[in-house]
Image (cartoon, rainbow, N blue to C red; front, side, top):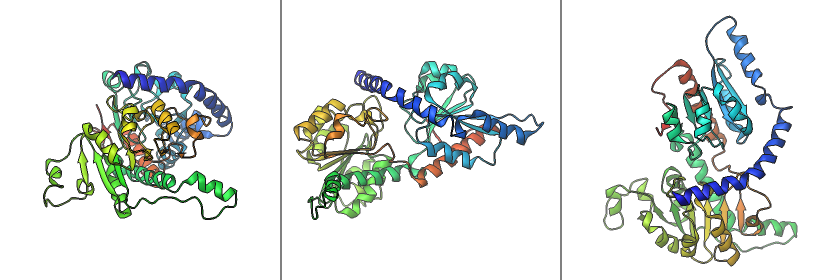
Length: 389
């Protein structure tokens, strides 16, 4: 727990100054151009439709302007439901308005105990996706607020993230930055890249994303090894018997549990982190783990930035032991474009878009909208979410 607290607290502190200026500029720019900032737009629409009707309005809060397609698609889905009010509020204003909302979509916001205590009208907190590490679930439970996430397997989020992992793997193997330089310098036939074929890929965390990744990796002719907390007992017989292989655990050539991660890291050409950020997984890709990896092997992270220990990753890139890094998530977000890690030619970064696709975001917007409608109509239990309390 101490390691996670230190890792997350450090990341949070480091991001404050960088985010403050960015959010202020974004708020000032959008306040004049975006109707989403004007709460009265949604309220007026509801009031005009209701007329003299006294039917109440259910208020939904989206925290911040990151991941804009989330609230855009939700608003589109709910346009024929005037009794659902959707507002987007800049992060630093949330403490002043959260008391007025029935439902909260977290996005990239941190909801601590103090903020949750102010949410006196709140009935439900949810993520536009799966990550709830920024929510104090215990505090929400004490205040009788349900906390839920959208299952990745059914929303398209897991498959979208899996495809991004392959994109980053191929970008590193084919030396994307060097190719861009060759184009600029009018050079042909260089650099010489590598193929996925014949590689051993270690999926660190064989959950929803890991399963979708394994499905897509099979046609590339790779060996797939994976770890997770527990496997089906019959699955452990796969490598020692003729037990019929299924479409999930049967995709894996070698299965392991958490204490096997260093051994598996030593065998892999590519490590892909698909872990959920928990106290026991924060900073798990540290100096010991990275040193266990083959010299020149690649690391891809599509989970959460806090899974990787920043200092250890930087040191391993500087020494040349780590052959390449592909990340869709970072230690602080938005990631500082001047960060030393981005200076390396064998580092690729994308702006937390692994799950941001038309398929996943349209599907998840529908889930958010349907949940808001259920909440408005007083239905219980609410369906469509995976609740954690």
